Image (tube, rainbow, N blue to C red; front, side):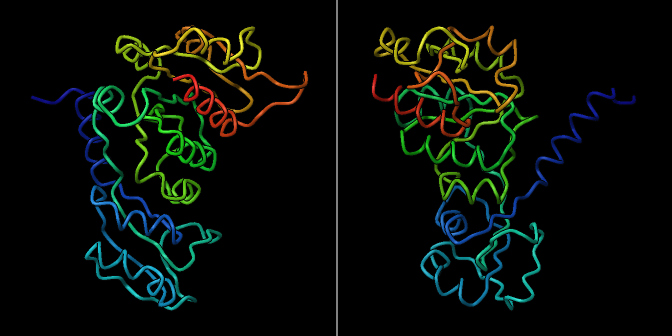
Length: 259
């Protein structure tokens, strides 16, 4: 009996995910991945200078690096990438289920949800802020979001190895699931009438999810409708705006201060 098309596509998707690898680059990103016991590492390519700087991490990982000439640093990354003579091929991290991370995870009951934020530099900066302020997870849809890449990892400056970055099939459905887990969901929108501080004043002791959209388009309509409340960052002047990574940092700081 012939398999239905959707079954074949699902199996192909699973095989593709299993075969997926990521090239991390830069001394900080490679060092932290080498020191992360949860990271499945495949191939380590270094210049002699980078190997000297990463000696402790290499020893901890048990990997045998390939030492190459700096002029022949031939790994599949963007030629313009500032790799600092270090590149590491890895498998994407697996953080576990939404409930395991968001309800049972370490840190404050605080999560970030990203609605089609696709710039890896923005997401890397958001992961870094999420780690600093102790968020349990950064959550994004599997499609139309920044994938786990070397550029993201370099901007995250090691946070990618420690800060859960969950990919979900449907953001609105995930928001509903978080609400059932006890989270209040605040969509950050510059046109909102209520400030984030005002909303948080009435939410002391509650688990909080901050929802941010891509710069320009902002939150999609369904995402807005799924939020408990739309909020804005109180600005000193009536014009100007923050980029999404800065807005995330301000939101995390405010939310953590109210917990």
